[in-house]
Every structure is written in C-alpha cells, then in structure tokens.
Amino acid sequence: MTTKKTIALSALAAFAIGGAVSAVGCSGGDTTPGGTQVAQGGAGGAGGSGTGANGNGGDFNFIDAGANDGALNPDSACAAQSSEASLVKKPVDIIIFIDNSASMGNEIVGVQNNINVNFAQIIEQSGLDYRVIMVAKHGKADPDESVCIEAPLSGIPQGGCAAPPAKPVNNPPKFYHYSIEVTSHDSWCKLLSTFKTPDLDGLAPNGWSEWLRPDSFKTFIELTDDGVSCSYGGVTYSDANTVAGGKSVAEKFDNALLQLAPEHFGTADARNYKWYSIVAMSYNEPADKPYEPADPVITGECPTAADPGTGYQALSVLTGALRFPLCDTTSYDTVFKAIADGVISGAQVNCNFAVPEAPMGSTIDLASVVVEYTPGGMGAPAQYKQVADAAACAPDSFFIDKATKTISLCPDTCALVQKDTGAKINVLFACDEGGAN
Image (cartoon, rainbow, N blue to C red):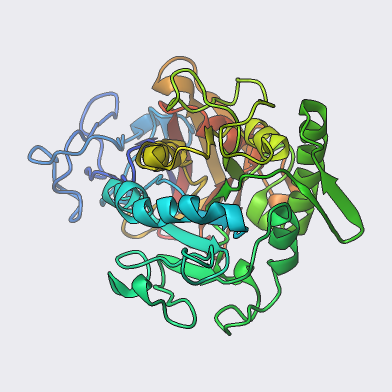
C-alpha cells in the first residue's frame, strides 16, 4: 500500500530581474509532538537529513505534516530532498519601426547614436532576456535616410556604418534587421504586410515574425514625424490628425494586430504588447518629460513636425506606454533611457513554472495540486482550482501540462498575479511514497 504525504511549496515570486528562488531541504520524519518541522536554511536536504542551518535560503518552506497528512495547506508537508523552482521575468522582444522618409535623417542618426549605449546596454545590464528587431530600410542615414546599426548590438563592427555593407548583419540572438523602406504614413500597413513576408536580403524567409519568441512580451517603438494613412487587407487606417480619429484608428489597428497573431500579441482582455511612440507631438512641460498613458492625445506639433501622430499616440495610451516628442534629437539619450527603464520595470513575471521534484522514493500526485495566491505576500490567501487544460480556463484557475510537469496560470489569474509585485504563490500537492501516479 502506498502512503500519501503532503508537500507545501511556498515561493516568494522572484520579481527581481532574472531572479530565481531555490527550495530548501528538510528531513522526512516528524520531529515535534505535533509533527511539524520547518526548514529555514538552504543547505542539507539533498541527503534528506540536513537542517539547512548554514544555508541562506528560506524562500521555500517544507513542513512535515505528521498526523495531518493529506491536508493540503501550507502547514502540512514533508520533503526528503531539496527542490528548485523559479518565477522569473518573461523575455522581451523589442520591435522598432522607423520612418525612412526624407525628413527623418537627423532622427535616424539620433537612433543610431543612442540605441547601443542608452538603450541596449541599459537593458543588458539589468539581466533581462531581450532582443531587438529593427524594421526599416538598411543603409546610410545621410543622404539616404536609411538605418545602420553597429556593434555591440548588430553584427556590423563599430565604424562600419560609415560605408554600410549591402545588407544588414544580424547578431543572434540579440539583434535582427528586416530591411524594408517605411514611408511617411504606412508603418502600420508595413508591419502587417511584412509579418510573414520574406525580406529581400534572404535573412527572414518567413517574415520578421520568425524572430519573435512565443514566450516573450512584445514592445514596439515607433519613430515618425507623420500620421497614419495607409491601407492593407481591405482596411484603411487614417488618424486624420485628430483625437477622435487617432482613438478610432488605434482601436482598429489593435484589433488587426491581435487577430494577426494572438499567440504573440495577446487578446483584448490580456494584451501581450506595449506601443511606445516617438512622434511629432508638441513638447511636454518640461520639454524632456514624456507623456504618460493618462495624459491626453496631443494635437499640437513640435517645430520640425509634419503631423502629430494621433493614431500612434492613442495606441500608446491604449497599451499603457510612454510618448515622446520626436523633434529634439539632442534629448534622444533621455528618451531611450526612459524607454529602456520602462521595458525593464514593465517586464512581466512568467506565469508558467515547473512542478518541483518529489521527495526521494515518491511521486507527485498531479491531480492533487493546488495553487494558492496571497496578495502582496500577506493577508488571506485565495486558492486557485485546477482545470483540465488551457481550453477549460476560467477565472481563479490553472492547468498542468502533465508531459512537461509545468504549471500554467490561466490568463485572468496570470494578469492578476503579474500586477502584484509582492505576490506570494504557494503550490501545494500530495505525493505517493513507494508508488507511481
């Protein structure tokens, strides 16, 4: 006959970038009259007898249930060996669209001067897993209004953009360049039409979509001194340089993007992207202050503007991203630092995590798994129920991929946890000693 014991795995979400949390070990036997034993350290455990006194862990607590075996709560558990689990930040894919029209030469130079030091380097130092996908015509900024990115981000050596190679030099997995001319008003249509269309350089046979990672959060950055006016797939996108026009076209484009690839960009209830705008809107007060999502769409223009880009602005508002005036290229260091900081702070926790290893000689009863969420890491916890699979998802639920033993929070549950930087997640489960599932 197999005996059921219960394991409580308490994990304080590792919201630090790239943070991983390690479980601690404890003895498998009852050591107090009430049958409760708490492991506070991180050492021992592997052999089943360590107390963890010399460890620096404690983020995971394993407690022997003793007489209360079978009760799935954080005060009932035993583990005969250490386990590891982690809740980490999702990777981020950053897609940059740049207008290659004749009036954009200075702005393109501003991007080239800042994308390494004041953008990629800041994200790199944070430890966040990121990649940059450039969608714009490759070449010289002067006189062609084309874009050339150098090392360390690109594979083009520093100084190599003085005489750019005939085609971009990608630098997997950090940098990819899809070369296509983006004109004054058509970046949204180019975005949709090139998503799965081969580029002319043979670098992306399946379109720039092949460089997107399925588990990443998507961050778009738009640079243009014009508004939206183009057609694709029988749909016309035009912001008419007005607030109402911008809001309407932003909603229309958002819908098209979500339908294009919900596995990448999410749904209207749970978007998996943000849209940053560097457009020809008038300056904020002070001039280098970005416009927040709560600020209204601006119809005023900065000095070298053509149109204020109300459609792009409205999409930034819709997705909770910042907006910046395009005209002052001397402030691009501040702009790109602000976007880099936004990418880092906005990176979301991955809602998929592994079921821990069972104690030695035991197997985990996956059907018994319960996920418990404590808001802010304190207060009364709420328990989430297990459903059969993703198709059965509902609020306050999760499912398990039994082949990979991966726990996945359902979309509504995930969205709630991701908003709570102090969230505490307990994964409770039973195990069979001496038997198989």
